Image 1 (spheres, rainbow, N blue to C red):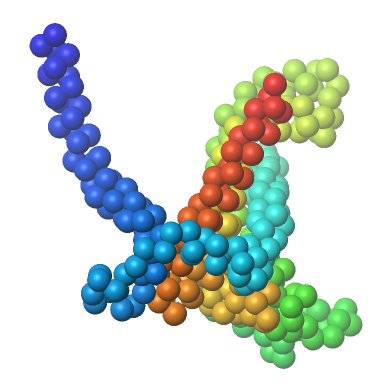
Image 2: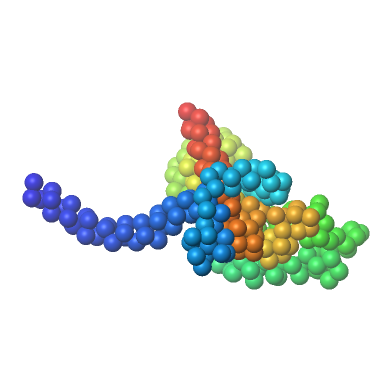
Length: 295
């Protein structure tokens, strides 16, 4: 009994401070924000809390009645549905290429592909704004050689979101690539040797060995990519400010504008918890699909 108490005391001694910090700096702010979403907390309430009033579910009702919320949700889903799978596919392709025995200087290529991940997103977005420039941009200059007229990539509602998706995939695929490489290196080599002896070609090896063995890694990457892409903010904030005509307005950018431009903090926190609920539901769906696939 004394050993059990001493072990519990030791665990509490080492874990307790970390849990206390997490509680104070994470759970308390989350709880406060959740309570704030039921109030009309604004810039006047910052100076005097007596100005804050309890409004119940009015913020959430206003949220679902606001067309701009649905526009931002549609844009965010478009970004997630198109950009997420594209990012995973590019990451897996790069990982397969760098894991191949035919490629030399693998370390150099891994470093090169990973550099955009550790580069400041704002700096990357500014550089890509110049690449997308309608008159002097590198992309339009290259397209001019095949007879394509200049395109206003960030000023045309048809191309603004695809342009941001392209930049985001380029920026983020290196991180997922490293995780995929780790997953590929954990696949036993004898499985491929047995497949070769059975006459399986490269496609069959990829389909029946690589993909099933990478399923847990793919699920992890899909979830973190989906969560990250739902939080789209810096790219449209720096490159388009949500335009043109709100075609790149994301939920997080909308939340930022309501909270820090118009100081509707109560309404802004309601947007945040609506986004949390959406991410939670989509994550559970991904887990469900993965479980059914394994069964």
